[in-house]
Image (cartoon, rainbow, N blue to C red; front, side, top):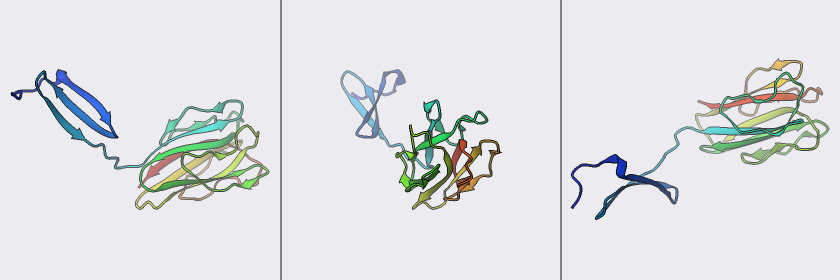
Length: 171
């Protein structure tokens, strides 16, 4: 017989093939409920390769990545983007100029080469209603204005290095 009331202390939870299942456990029956998590808004996690530090921990939307005011250059950026479309990045690196564009979950810039990132462009591809905003902290100049959707953030060719960056997705 099915229970007439449910005691939630007897529920178990599991992920099966990307779907969330919740089951009531009773010696004679199992009632299953299926839930799907739907992500409405895009989200970012990003980390950087910083001079004398190496790879940093991941930070989330709109958090500071890097070490501002200490003269330690940001050399590479790695962004994990979850949401519609695709995120594209391009870095301008000391002695190399503009590198090829890369998509999210790929390193943008250089690591272990001792080269400073001087400017960066970030944009969303095939996404309506959302924009990517980003601002950089330049050694000796501080935080620069917010840029968006592929605009240059930094000081391309000036010999100044990016120390830190903030990135966010918004409508």
